[in-house]
Amino acid sequence: MKHVIIGNGPAGVVAAETLRKADPSSDILMFGAEPEPAYSRMAIPYLLEGKIGEEGTRLRKGAGHFAALRIREAQQRVVSVDSARKKLLFADGKFETYDRLLIASGSHPVRPPIPGIDLPQVQTCWTLADARAIADMAKPGARVLQLGAGFIGCIIMEALAKRGVQLTVVEMGDRLVPRMMTPKAGGMIRRWVEAKGIRVLTGRGVQRIDAPAKAKALNVTLTDGEALTCDLVIVAAGVAPNVGFLENTGVHVAKGVLVNERMQTAIPEIYAAGDVAEAPDLLTGAHLVAAIQPNAADQARVAALNMAGGEARLSGVLAINVLDTLGLISSSFGQWWGEKQENGGAGVESVDEANYRYLSLQFKDDVMIGATSIGLTDHVGVLRGLTFGRVRLGEWKDRLLADPTRIMEAYLARAQGAETRYLGTRPI
Image 1 (tube, helix red, strand yellow):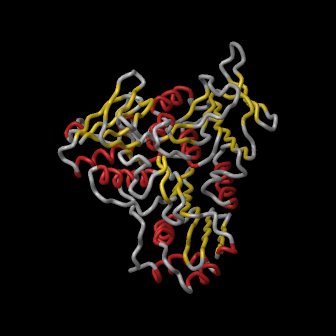
Image 2 (image 1 turned 90 degrees about the vertical axis):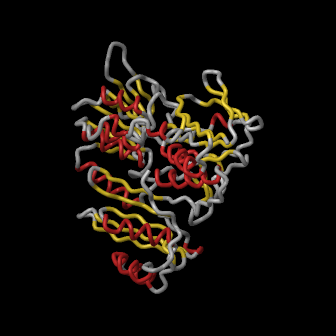
Image 3 (image 1 turned 135 degrees about the vertical axis):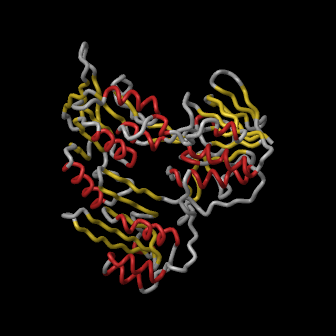
């Protein structure tokens, strides 16, 4: 049996290792599109901060790790898949055949259609090559504009701030991290960031970027007409799954590659895992892309076991976000935005703005379906357990609506000893 894996990020690596354990005699070939050893993109901010070197970004540190497991590696970019002939075409014109194929091709940063977006002083922060370019330009005192303040943007923002640059952040939404934080919580994070000396502009975007002749600096025009001069622009406007090579394959693609609970696509021999996969949500059953490493690792294990002939099932993807923004810890779980009242929804907020403490709990009937917190690090495990354990709270729901700070009591009273059905986070 020949297993081919497109992608050598967290999902690809975990899948390859799982396949080797489940199928000791198989041929395993893992392709990476970059001329780098398998590494974690989530380690790049630590590289920019100077906490680690490039060696520290690698997913497996030991020399010869994959060779020892008889996992073959290659650097090639796939441009098309012939699912009928089970054949891959690469950018250099070469082909590769497979018996089972795993799509773990990850995602790529989105570049909005802004005039000047392709200038050399405009960078994304997604690859090691990006990190090297940013490190060369983001010197102490450099004027840096960051476009986007979502989850990834806030991680990049912290790394830039620690490099000592003059940082301005522009976010189209009405708050920071709008896709994981409630309006109140996003506003609190903004105030925290501004107190650290970062200028934050919400409800605005970049209209154009110009590079005047013989000038090293850029002129950036915002959508409200404000003009800024900067040395570097970082684009952190989100990511999109790498699915272009799947045209005309029969693999169904929406936002990502649609898979079932076995991580299997519409083509039985083809599976998908990680940032590229659109899998059923644990709570709602609706398909979504949940691009976090614990999900990638869980999906990769399930896909690999099934590729090897097993019968593994994924309980569902977990919408989890835990973010450290310049020392302020925030988190969101599940359906953090809540449910409509007519559908049995109810919610409550506890706000301590002076001390940067915040807690939002969202319910459907007597089950907590989502939560958001700031500055409450001791509660992260409890919020996760109650949300993804789908624990029936009974009378504790009304008690929490009256006083959400009693969340630990509710957990001890209702969740201890109860069977939780979410997959645990595992190291990759």
